[in-house]
Image 1 (cartoon, rainbow, N blue to C red):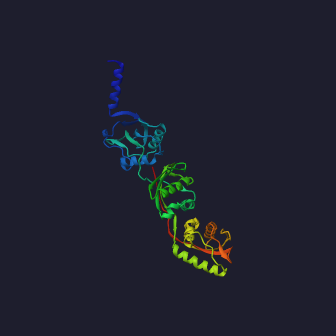
Image 2 (cartoon, rainbow, N blue to C red):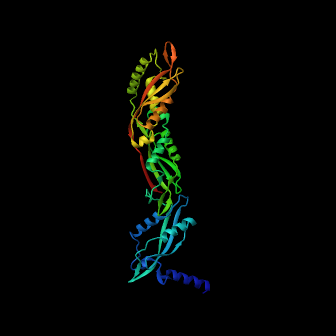
Image 3 (cartoon, helix red, strand yellow):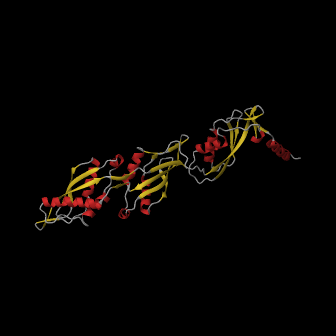
Length: 369
């Protein structure tokens, strides 16, 4: 028999032997089935795999497949030698080795009354699929949850076409807060309307960096889900009642200024109310604090129909006052008022009602992917 054949036979006999090697003077067994009592991880094999998947700092790569990991559980229950026979990716193999090396002690295996070492094999499947597993710490918007929703509200544009058709609703959006805090992979999970959906995606894409979520003490990529209500608020609006209210104010102002014809907004009083309601953006600090109130402004419709000299004569809140002035200042030209057959400057008043009908942060959830 040749030397090569003798060597091969010896290796095969060695592998098939119950005791295959000695490590730190411990006998190390090749198969758990050869033991009287197999080593046991706290919470069993299910707990072992849960620990492994939870603690791997997994990044979203194209790596797919099964990684085969063999490791020695020593007679003291601690993990010793680690061997990876199908690494898939060197960096990922190093991460798996780190996690296996961090395993808490097992209850050691035994042969008779003697504790012994044993090789154990596990398979880790990539990509890791963990359904909505919570990170140890969630990603956090700088300034907190209120600040995030205030940012969304301040930057929201309610599409004109949706406003005209009365289309509104909650758009479900899922996105990743990456390990560096940036936003990626934005997906609409609960569509409402193509324009509203696009607005929700635009708002999420604008979010500044978060403080990233963590798992096992390391920053990790985390899925975050939001339900964004568009519009963010809905102001109570009885346009007929408000138009009637404005008509009474207009009649009084006309009487006081001896007008032949009062200034007329294009489309009439109801269109004026509608314009203001749609142009209004509820100040975020007041929306978050549920501050409501009426702001009355005085303004001039000049003889050329333009609007100017807008001043608050009845205040509700500094932010509400500022918004009322902004919206009234933006009014397009009126048909000017007439007195003695000539266009004249006319002092007008309008009360802007800030009243929230429905308000909420929406819903947010997060999980490691």
